[in-house]
Length: 263
Image (tube, rainbow, N blue to C red; front, side):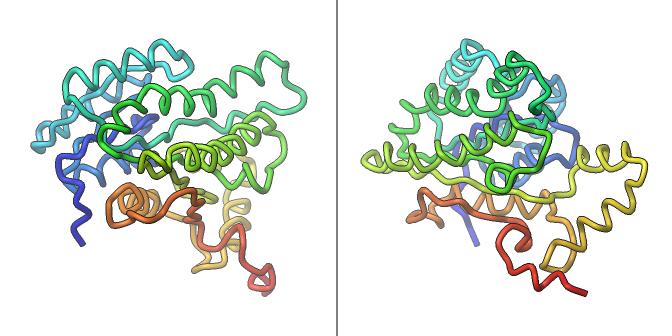
């Protein structure tokens, strides 16, 4: 299926994680569709990623940006528009499950919110004039933690709950502009960061097996490629009548009957 993304300028924040991370995989999927991925991140991996895309014939740039700093976000959007003259879609992907819980300071809680939800607002705010001009759309990357809780990560849970609220609020706000706003909700996805976390645990292999057993569909982790495919479809005009939705790519982890998990 042609998603009609060729030459669409798609801004992807938090896009310069390790190879195989969700953001980096989304960028690669967009490039496969002929889109123009714009990489927004503070990590200098973006220099190499953009160079690789250019070698493939994809007109991509990396704009180094600390997403906790609104003035840097504003400057990044200005750089993008100076080069391309338009923005067709925004994928808000940044975030870190940083374990800022009730034992943390108020300052740590606020700092976590700056990255995990305030940055979503700032990215949308500064991209919005150009999304209005293109009748583009916004896709927020969410987490099941915002709906189910996790324990020990108050700030991330609050932020991801906020992302869900913003998704619905913006869908209402922007419907008159013809701008769609949706969220992809991720549960257990096998990324390099997840692998690293498992390896820090004393009983990592046992923990991983216990998690996988709780994923109803095929008892396996979601792949970053499955997330990226859903993202590409959702921002495309093949999904032209979908807005205000929470789209779960999780193998049924959050919603399906627990009786499926009995042995």
